[in-house]
Length: 500
Ligand code: ADP
Ligand code: MG
Image 1 (cartoon, rainbow, N blue to C red):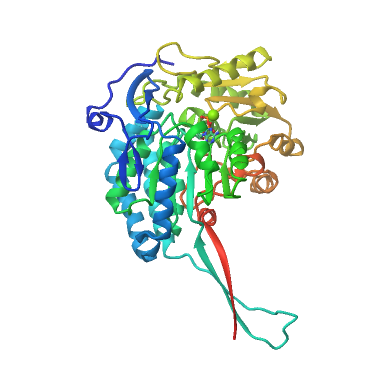
Image 2 (cartoon, rainbow, N blue to C red):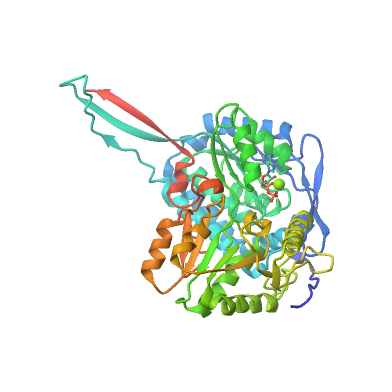
């Protein structure tokens, strides 16, 4: 493993980074009412790279008023679905046209390798808007035959209307800053909602750029408002605001519970995409070469900062040593470094706080008796780098097995056979995703049926697509992102009954 190196920030980003970035409220870029700003850090170097307006409750107030006005009177809700669709499609086009810059902002803000940001985050974000642009014109209700038992002989014409829920607050995390914005905005815009978006305080830059592109695409004033700021202030103000009809949150399970509590005031609708501790199961009949590479990618992709990461690797006992050795070798050979270096395979973690969290888990795991067969600690230097780590000898009660680490740390545990694997896989409070590697289709489908997870990958991992619903069982969340399922988060049903 090589040591992290420093790379200069692309000069082309300088115009965007200069001067404090502002809030987007009612189509205007404005300073926070308090005048405050906060620093944005490059996780590879620990240097401040930008200042961003620190919005709080006072700014949320203005943003909600703008979104309300845009929903109640604005052109947005009065235009045809086809007109809405064209604007949403154009956002996708503009993302694609600005792919290099968006990828660079993502690397600067989050740390991820710039090639990955362009190929995955940016490409998926553009595709999400296009997928949802297609749905805008296909939001339909049903006609429903009635059989009212207490009105014999009467005839009714009954139908449903599918209507946007109204003003929505969307609070997103820092692991895929642009893509999480796209997952949230796409369906909400497709059905005609208006929005207050709060990016994570660690990674506000690409959301601000996305806001500029949305205006350029022709999104009317007030439809998308962006309040950058901290969770406890701006985020909490959105979640608790009576003028917000729905809140959609992606982040930690701990904060998800706070959101639910904050939403009780006006009983706003809530959807949540939360943490995970996903099982990834390798059977001895799997194509081991693919499974080993897949198991490594399942945990090391995005520095392990993926809610659906395959962080609990279960390997059938006969091939346990071989698979663990293979994943460990990949970990040891991984080039960890600045995301702007073309050869970098893994960047830094997003923040100092996250670095402390992950290294804290590593320490606790090793003290509890886990053994690192690769990595095991931080990488010294200015940035927030940790070693890709494979832990053996981990047992079910250790915090490294039970809790979401959100870093490049996998626990590898052996299992005997089918009789015990489902018990292990489901021994978690989470239920976001699961993986299985086997050549036996019956084993694969049985596992897919029994595992309590919102997504099951068979002989693959971390496959995401705008059309494929994603979300959690158990404490991994409420509702689904992507696919037509995501539209449900932003729609409500009105039944109309006509006496003929
Ligand atoms: P992490 O701790 O890994 O940063 P969080 O769940 O705290 O993950 O953050 C996800 C998002 O939730 C961020 O946009 C953050 O600002 C926001 N957030 C954090 N705390 C709150 C809160 N109390 N109310 C609303 N939003 C919050
Ligand atoms: Mg937090």
